[in-house]
Image 1 (cartoon, rainbow over the protein chains, first blue to last red):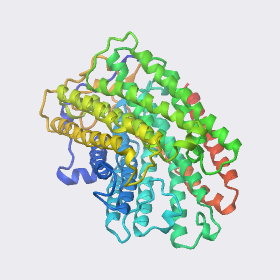
Image 2: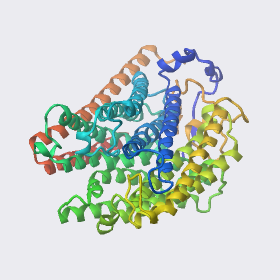
Image 3: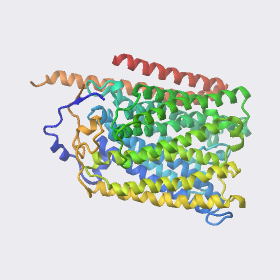
Length: 531
Length: 73
């Protein structure tokens, strides 16, 4: 990367003590991107624990055949809320948290373009989360039709479904506001000399992700609005009894839903693209091709939605188109994986915790991508649709993909955020325990799916018992392991540990590492000059 | 040497105006998608509707990224 000069150093030390309200008022009224980033990250971790608890309930029920722990209706609510909370409450806010903290510091901006709207974007999240969780306690229970909210079940469901629709609307509004903020910040607030093609790849992946969000979140909002009017205002968009078409909902939902997968994974790609060059002590291989591959993935994500619907009776031409279009995504994704490997090739690599998570991500995400390619083959997908093979596939992409990247990113940037180094030994234990328990949980699900075990069922045939028991043990292990991460981050937040230097990673070369650690409350009020 | 405060204020005002303009364009896109997806269901022809929306997305991305890349050069 090009060398960077800036003029912040004199006088920046005392900005740590910049005037701002203290206590709860600070967090309610803050317009500071770092405060808001912190709130996003803690919120997402809280929701990760809530969604994780629901996963534990699911795995406890599936520990052995028969109904032991919960009733089938509640089990269905758990699978639905687990999906909604993990996608909208944990993973997406975590990505926005990283964006809030890092984008202004990486492009040399003083803050986000719309600081007050940034505060509002965050504070919409807790009410939405409360709506989702309290839907468990209303008559009829929470939504139980799966996170995809397919009619006709969602048209017939009770009041919990209305709360879910309202929550999705609020979450969508929050995401759109966040995206507008991120795009405007990147396009208008870059420091002099920070051209688009000099931006760190994390900013590029977020720029493209934000465009995706602007395009598809309104589509989801439209879909659930139509669902709402079908439920309460006598329309028949998706209600077959009134001449509507339930399959139409699937088209609209997946027009949102597939780009959503890339909304979740692209920021993770960005984080990995920062970590690997740092610990390989080499510039990122093929920077421009990484940017174009990211854009290529985003564009292709709009033309593959019906691969989620191969069994709905699409015409043959449609099946073939969506099958080949889906396979095409392997090309830009392959470019990225190749470039990450090429960056590591003959690099002077060390394996601190962020790099371990990055390498773990590479290995497991590639595996998840490969099973995605298997699912893309239409005749195969007809066999494995709605089986545990699909559950295994998307958890390899979502958990080992996004979540591992976010863990890596948290370890990578926590010295900058908190001014304290994390406990390296604990971090490595966290990684290896997560890596092993993740595979113990989800790898057997491939076998279960191939053997024909359907997803979203609380009970199953005897022949699936052994692998389910192993998967449940792995899930409890994986869940407990995350307490190590919590402990590690809390210790850093409390300043318990070795003091972090301004640049703890000698291979790091982006703008945030030119700031002291912890990063001052206000940074780059005078824009740095990037050469 | 101190920067001219008037031109600094002008610069800040121009930046705010540019931010508002960018946000307005993006918000409009979001609204078009929201209203558009419901309107196409009213008008029928879901395949056409989705095709048009999909093409619009692709075209928009190409134009937006292209314009920015050119502008920065």
